[in-house]
Length: 236
Image 1 (cartoon, rainbow, N blue to C red):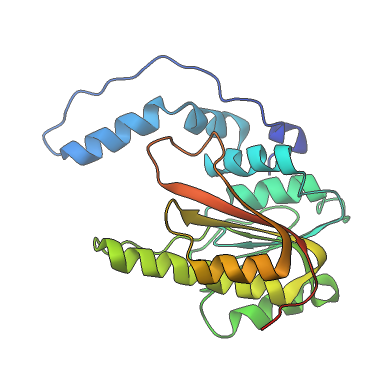
Image 2 (cartoon, rainbow, N blue to C red):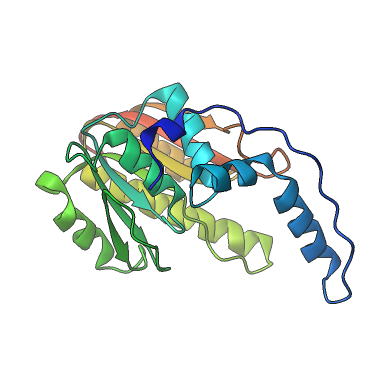
């Protein structure tokens, strides 16, 4: 696991641009993807600092600004694979030292991370919320993170509904498990945070805002909704 000092939130270093010769067996789209990966400073920085993914820097940047992951906090990481957010959470709440706690879940296997308990299970499985709660100290959490993304179908409306469905399920779980004053951070997409989801969050938290960390690619519609100051109850 990466050391806590590696989550300082410093910008990714610049690097020389790499160009690939087009291979016959490589499609134009895969060529563009590979070039983007090779030229992405966050990908290089993640590799250099031992993070599982460039997504680690998104959480670093958000947490550096909003101070969510404090030592001793209990964290649930939904959609954890490959484990970048789990690494950062464990380092910052100091779960390795036995202060905080990190419980993560993903339907894909995640290699073990020091200071984290990881469930290989679909969060949308009806047994998942109960299993997560059973692992948490006192059955509750201080922070719920969700970087879950639905598998794309190629049909924009269907994909949108799936994304919102995951976000709403994560928000409902957060309202069930968070202690008063807790926080919820969830991936959504620009233009895609539905009224029902925002209404639930505004009823349940004192502050709700959208954030786009610098590590999110500019061309991406990816966005995060951050709700802080959980009120301790969800009104109908």
